[in-house]
Image (cartoon, rainbow, N blue to C red; front, side):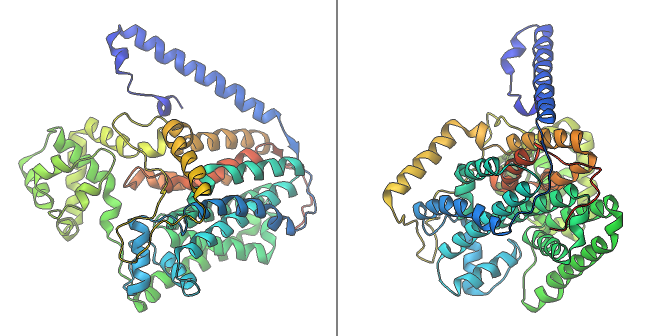
Length: 501
């Protein structure tokens, strides 16, 4: 929290060193005190877990309000919001020239829906329905574990009215689906943990876990490592159910490789460029060149083959790799003809310029860990229109101008006045970490498994985030709401009998 809230604080350097030291220490102690007080308040405030028989129709009942609330955003931004990434999917459903640059499974999903109605609106509305059902399942799961119905409804209302939960589902982005399934994965793991694994005893539940896992693997390139780590963690944590968990790992793994291998080949799907995974090394090299860091003659010659050194300097943006990797002179073939040489050159450059490399890394990943937006940085928030420059005559056409004005004005105000409160993902990460710590203290260490999906997503993004886009971390918003709900539930770890859901 200390470093996440830290601004440049350059004015402090005008004072003696002991004043700077005093300020830092007092700030840290104050944050520590507030955090400890809040943590133990969360531990004390508990609803004893009393497993209740709750009708599954509750899932649909809890999902009605989100559907109504979020549909207002679709009316305002009809037929949905789209950016160049969205239009890449839209182009492929017309040309059938498939690429996995953006997950082709999401392209096929769009293709299937638009065969019914050739409009982005059907995709946006389907995302509203699916995310609302996941929200309904979250409410159902929380009520089933003993939370009074009135408090579940309070959570559903707040979840439905939160602006980010309304504007993101109408965006035609694969990140919305990916975030939704991470949210569902979190709910499933909560059900596993709070039932001491007995939730896994149902064939239906195991099938749901498999489908959710496969969706995560296929919907974004970092989905597979997230699934593998979670799958192995659950396997060791719940050994009595090792057969079901092992089957899940094997079935999902085999399905993933069958789909991305033979089936992709059959459908002539073009693979994504491996250069997408090199955002961090690219930024570190560019920053070192920009700051005239220590480079040998051989290193300069090698980097010059990839991109002329003057363009490394000119195109470097501390928070975005696009200007470098999409430059017409950028030759990624040099990298992949001898990838070992690239890695060794990068490692050598970083070791000789470690301070500059760390600076570049912290800048590029600031969207993940920093609450205060850097003074020279930016945050790509949410789309509020349909990208005008497209070949398909698509444009934003609100169904009701009054509704459009109301929602658009509110979203503009959020961007202008609440960016560092609402639109920095680290805010939600902080809430998640605090609530899971409290939950683990009062229910046991296995509760830490519940937040693995979102924390692993953030962790993998720390290795290769290409830009400062909030949508990469939208799952944190959904999960933060869920964690605030379940942190008040204290399950009885000595409970002997738990009904299968």
